[in-house]
Image (cartoon, rainbow over all chains, first blue to last red; front, side, top):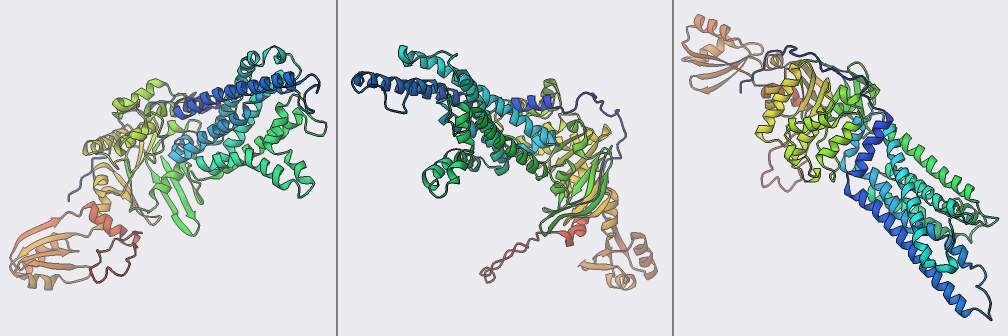
Amino acid sequence: MATSTSPAPTQQRPRPTRDAGSGVNFGRVLTSEWIKVTTVPSTVILIVSTVVMMVGLAALAAWAISITQQDLASAGGPQGGPPPGFDPAEQAWMVPSSGLIFGQLLIASLAVVLIASEWATGMIRSTMVAVPKRMPALLAKNVIVAVVAFVVGAVSAFLSYLVAQPILGEDLDFSLSTEGVLPSIINTGTYLAFIAVISMAIGTLLRNTAGGVVTAVALFFVVPVIIVNLLSGLADWIPDAARFLPTNAGDQLVAITTESDALTQWEGGLVMGAWALVLLVVSLVVTQKRDV
Amino acid sequence: MIEAQALSKRYGAKTAVDAVSFTVQPGKVTGFLGPNGAGKSTTMRMIVGLDNPSGGRVTVNGQPYAQHRAPLREVGALLDAKAVHTKRSAYNHLRAMAATHGIPNSRVKEVIELTGLGPVAKKRVGGFSLGMGQRLGIAAALLGDPHTVILDEPVNGLDPEGVQWVRHLSRGLAAEGRTVFLSSHLMSEMALTADHLIVIGRGRIIADAPIQSIIDGQGKVRVRVRADRPQDLLGSLAGDGVSSQILEPELLEITGVEPRRIAEIALRENVLVYELTPLQVSLEDAYMELTQTEVEYHSHDLPTADQAAAPVEGR
């Protein structure tokens, strides 16, 4: 076969001009990551269903509490008062954060999916060609997912509060100014933000959606249950240490009142935040070194 | 301009890229040619920082890719047509990429038109054909209007019209003074598109030269000769580096001697020569000759019935 080549081309046009202010900066990477979150249907569906589920659960919790309260009231009189350790009013104050139990599952899935799906589809290579320093891209993803989780948590808790009042009825409804209620509503958001960052780090390290979700669920649900139910008898320090698991610490973060020997709200928040920070740093370091 | 210096990549005991050094010049199309598994993609991935080199360094326009403030404006790369979230539309994918550099949506629409993606831009990428995926990858590569364009196997999966389009695009970009670095395992495509060739085999550069000089230099001169007494002619021609084949009683193919020298000898020996045709060596022949010893996966003839019982190794 004969081959031919064109004569060496000459420069017909000057090199394309470039706008000096057109580089990568964190704000632009944030914009890019926000576009990514909002342009995949599954993430939007997950966000909406999290709010719906959390408010729905809170309404159910409020309904259950009011039923119990009515039962206690009608059975009351001679026996006098509720059983020890059960205070319907205090239970009612926890209603706004009661959606967390499942809400965190959805937010964990969202965070894992956001990063692991990039690995699964190969999108991560486009991301890292556009932002070759890598860290800004991953940080932006974490900021977005944390802010989304915070807003979802705080808004759901506030909506839950509003929905719960008529269900709780005149005996149990409470005002936002009740001590600890407003911080609990806001920290429902904080809790989910920490869950999101921890889960995204897990997703980043495992690069696999299914594996990431399973690992996150194990860390948040299974490990605490195993420790409390099976292992706590083995040694005195085990239940002590279990207080520092992320979800156990998180429970303290949203609590209205805390026992004297338990972590306070602040301590719970700091412990959970430390989990998030450490895992975030590990995931950043690993990503920096990895071949994509 | 892309400059690689002693660039290496090892995966465990296996060396994918073995201390390669080369320069890809602006203003022309440089073909990166090699058999599958030769290290083309790995080299290209190291250029844009997706893979960390095990040794050596590579710079684009004087700096490592990751050090550029606006990498997409320096280099546009199509490395993998499937580097896209399957649930996102082509338009939104490009929009997200563009946003990292503050590239306006008008440019996104421009590259969509340029690559002919208009009719499918709002559809999910998951449903794209391989060819459409390639066009989307090329669109992403062109987003930043980059000085340097790197395309890994860009014609894979394209129809003939698409192949021609990539050829024109590459030549056009080079004519504008840009650096165009194009990989392929298809020699015929390179022959039509590239000005300069870098041939890689088993992770090593085995040729780095203008395409014509690879064709000229590799294949030795081959001449078809029709003569009435071929034996006499061959007797006088015999010497170092000369080989010949008698194809028909009066038809010869002689390798390693210039046509003029054959004519001189024929004249001296009084042999009647009635055809003397220099045969052009194709790039394909040159390439096969270059890479013969550097191919990682050799194909074998299919086993015959009695051999079929024994498993045949792929290499």
